[in-house]
Length: 249
Image (tube, rainbow, N blue to C red; front, side, top):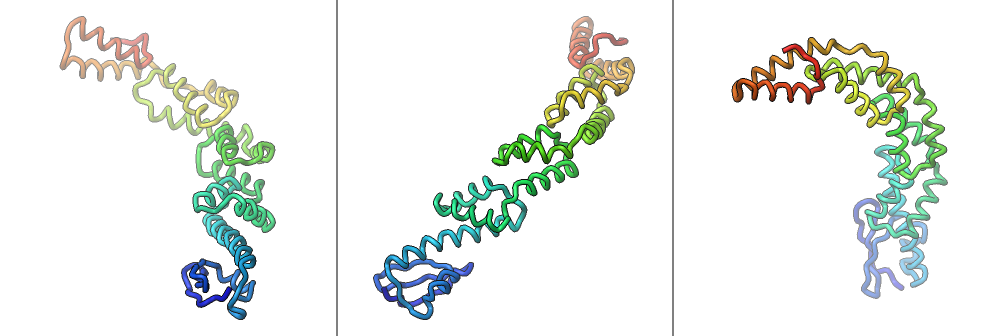
């Protein structure tokens, strides 16, 4: 089959015009590999083989470009290629090539991700593990990588989070605040034993001082709408909701 002409496109691609009226987009590396610029003709079977290789070449370069921004997992690469209309058979071969070229080292990815989370976030080890598992990484590699996130580091972070929450508290009782801190930190992915080892040793502010100030604020606000026993009832309900069962009126 005779090749009539070539037309250069973007990203190293050429549009190849064939004598049968078909036009195909082929990467320049494939054109050079098969010597099309010299012989300027091809067979149907050779063209089919070239187009199969072409899909792999295009997908591989897409993956490399995607990886150039940051490290990716195998699952992320597969999802990305699928979204870019690369067929499953080609994806399998592309992943094999990426593995061969050491672009998909799971242990390196896990180690990098964990270090970033430790340095740049308050995410706990459970949350980090859940995220890495969702990316399709091996659990034993994740557990091995998480040994760096030991109890000492966890407790230091827990202490900082608790201290910040206590400093910003202005209205909640120590009982409610303590439970709020525990739940918040647990949801960040820390282990209960590490959380309680810190929280049980924290000295919370005097409830009576907070209660008195909060009572005065609530009373002043509600007294604009209510009075008498109705006012007192509503004030007490607000105080109870904040965790103050004993307070000076």
